[in-house]
Length: 220
Image (cartoon, rainbow, N blue to C red; front, side, top):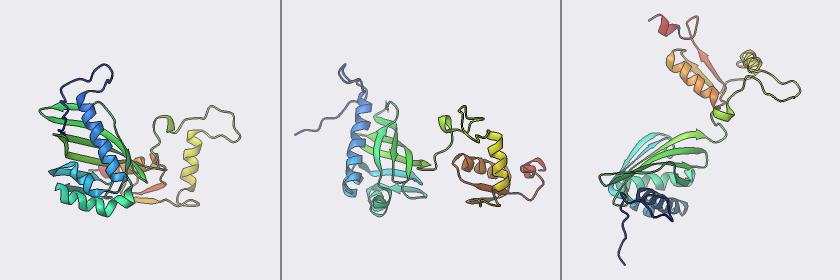
């Protein structure tokens, strides 16, 4: 039996609207998902080029780590796969094909998080894979439809405006309610981190020695 290779520059026929590049990404992801679900780290590693790269931002390793080559990839999966339990690998956008390289953005999830990945293929094998953690389940960022509203336009008892909720948080956080995170320094980085944690629903306090947050920048 001979292997059939998909030409990424060809478009699919009218019965299947996906391009050849989309098919290549989807096929690789299906094989990868199957291998990981079966805890077959050897089969998963074989889907990479012999000297392929896997760069992980927190999603698998809780660190910033690059695996170089199949042996490194196999070792990482051997130690982390049972805890992470990745699944539901899906192409997020139409794939691209250029000079023999197919690349596409991918979504996936683990037991504790949802992630975003970028995959590049050459001759059906993964040349590079980047995996990133985007949000922790149960601590999703309050944005879009989940964002804080100025007022809930429903009739309920003791409903509060956004300003009332903010004042209540200022009066209770650090007193009757303790923060999960204390940030030392109210400069640009500290304020930015505090804002991100707030949108994720994590109680946070910023400790700043100057009179106002941001004074360390204003008084430079």
